[in-house]
Image (cartoon, rainbow, N blue to C red):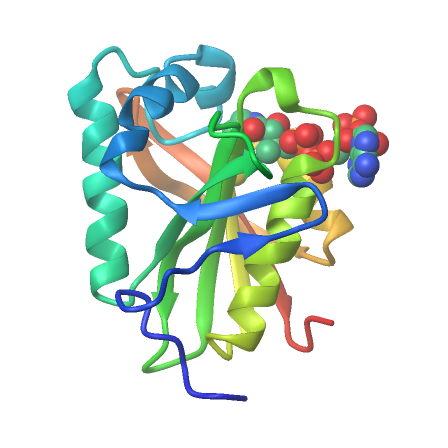
Length: 187
Ligand SMILES: CC(C)(COP(=O)(O)OP(=O)(O)OC[C@H]1O[C@@H](n2cnc3c(N)ncnc32)[C@H](O)[C@@H]1OP(=O)(O)O)[C@@H](O)C(=O)NCCC(=O)NCCS
């Protein structure tokens, strides 16, 4: 493996057959608001549907902070050559010191579900994690009932390791989280 990527210093533009992935920037806030304003998108996520631009800007700030500390990265997902934001994906968490773990996350606007686009984006995220971050273990947290997310993870070789009871608290209550993981090799 080459040296571990310094996320703050690299442009981190990724390409797949159909998509271009670019780390979230402040100019993406309005499109993020449209994405996360849809209750169908946030149903199984740890956020309520967004109502104002400040919340979307907060997501960009959070992502930039993660990236600045080599602790995560969130890409905006677009069709190649098209500025419209279809969704996001990336690593919510990275542990590169006392482990080699990354927690993947992804979402798409509902109009783009069922076309294999999240799968394509996740392949790019996994490839980056393997080749540039030297990850050994990939994790994903899934809210029970999110069958599309489970199908996506299983297609990529993730296996369910268990249920973390009352692991999260959002939208006014505790939520179980299913933990899925995949170990290296990732090719
Ligand atoms: C989770 C989520 C990203 C999954 O999106 P998705 O579009 O179902 O996932 P994929 O990209 O793997 O697409 C798979 C589907 O596309 C179909 N497909 C069509 N063309 C395809 C192609 N060229 N390649 C691969 N699959 C293709 C597959 O047959 C599959 O169909 P199915 O859903 O009927 O089984 C999406 O439901 C979402 O954004 N949900 C809201 C946010 C969320 O919950 N995120 C996860 C938090 S853990």
